[in-house]
Image (cartoon, rainbow, N blue to C red; front, side):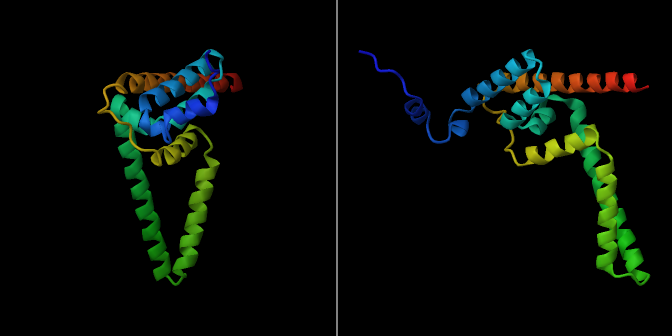
Length: 174
């Protein structure tokens, strides 16, 4: 007589760290769930699902030639802005102001400037912060390559859909 399967027994068979022990199966499941959410019209939820299982930055570095240029330019701009703020703080400190007050004031101005720009750039920054903590994708694993390519294609489609939606909203506002 066949025994009815139990969820806990099945999970025990998969192992302690299923995400790392069977990445192909895990990532395929994430991708399948995201595709289903896209079919249901839940684009933001699908993007969040993909983001939870894949390192989007790693995928873009591998498959999107323009992303790496943009990524490097953004980092160079951030470094230049930081140097400017530090130089300004030193200049003002030499003029008699306390260095801590100048730095605190500059940081506050910088934070206000960033918070006033709530748009796609801020969303990208949030994604980058969470994605930085994720390990790079394993492009050496040949079983993962088609899954990673498909995940990138889905991310690309979702981002294009988002841009298209924003354009439509802007047209309605004008």
